[in-house]
Image 1: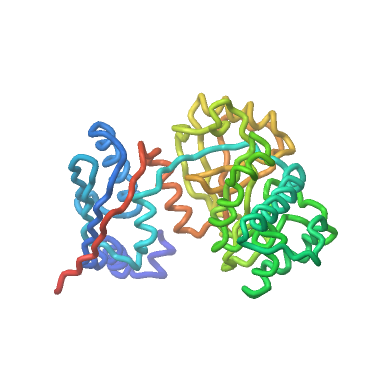
Image 2: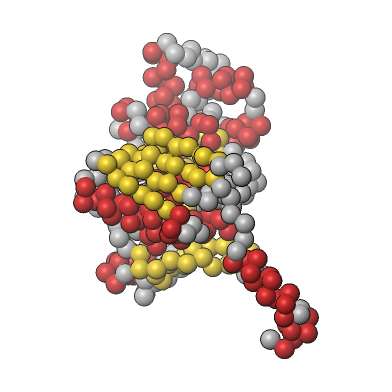
Length: 359
């Protein structure tokens, strides 16, 4: 403190503290109308969860008003500043369910041959339906997957349409392989442009294609750009999850988090999330990690894979980390959601309005 007093006069320190405590507030008010799929009792829990999320995000309790009417909520947030919390982030805070799951995974090499069969089957389906005419000059049995990977990231629309004739799946899903054509290690089985992810899932959910795939296989997309691609690349990875339970749920899921906090990487690098599990979940996590040493476990939040680390050894005590190339704001939002708890039902924004008062 003596050093600080020499560098900064006490009055300057006082003014600095006051400017932080009494910073200028915007006059904007954000109003959201939400539709919730829960009864009156659960609606009260939703209100509490949303209130906690907004407070953890930096809003004052007195600026938050939440009212419910049957299956609808009206949320009014005074002094909203979109430069501090963008509207898109605020929407996520209000609607994210917070379902955290830990899944066992397939290795890419276990699935890639199944995708080759799916690609061939899709070409036949489209040809028979007349949607696409097969190019007889192409050897459909010879999948030049290396050139497909390069084409996905560099081809124009006309080239992609030509490739779709014989390889409907691999023309928009680049298989995860190296230059020699061998499967890359890990649970990512392919990379796709963000705009094609919906079409790929519709292909993989086709009843004829489902019969070609393992019964215990489930696909999810990564939440962000996979490693090895530029951060602004509009691509996502397709992760192969392994269903191990009879009810087809994740190996570990539900209300399992006791605490969560943001940690900064070495030297102030990319932040990550440190989590502590509740006692029963910690015991399951210890068994799960022990049974999957050398394999990947995917950490999935609300249907997207945030990370898929390789288990190096049994993890006891229920402490673990979630990585995902987060920005500081994204890490804060995720911690907020994990600490606030799982939303009991779905939440949908049906109307929103930003009201700006004149000074």
